[in-house]
Length: 200
Image (cartoon, rainbow, N blue to C red; front, side, top):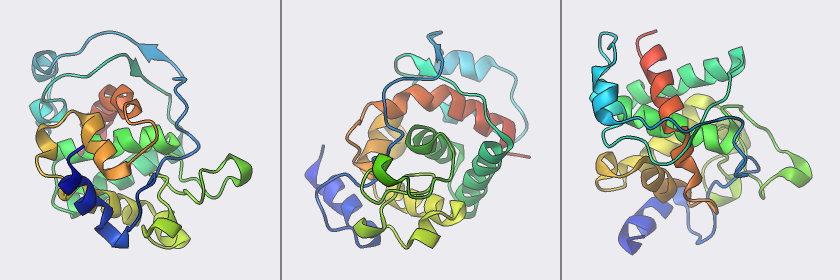
């Protein structure tokens, strides 16, 4: 990873450390269900397109690797909508929402997790498994979906060229996870959720 990019990202929100930023207890590699159907940007662009959603932006280079998918509860859908609302409020586009939702799917399965005791990765909490001790904010802040999404997006904005990176590289540059490749498996579901909820 480019040292300049990593150092600038680690400087966000007062982060001054070299370890994992947000790797949480939900980073095991066992997907709930795997759909290995390849999806290309061309196929995405040819799909029906709701007004206002540029499907070409959602997955500009196609997904990487086998994709995982979970069924969402009402709470998880509400958290998805909160991430999308925060993305719009930050003035960022659908691709930023895809990266954010895929990251939250990996970190917490879109559940706003509190402290999990022995199962916790240090003091990681919230949708993005951000750590108060690493400068992401207070427990109250990082368990607020709007705040935690905004904090993640501030980090993403600091990554030069994030829009053109594979999703898992962009997410990992912000999160500094012990499992850097695991974000990729959620790209298709994240794109589908953005398509469904961007205008809802």
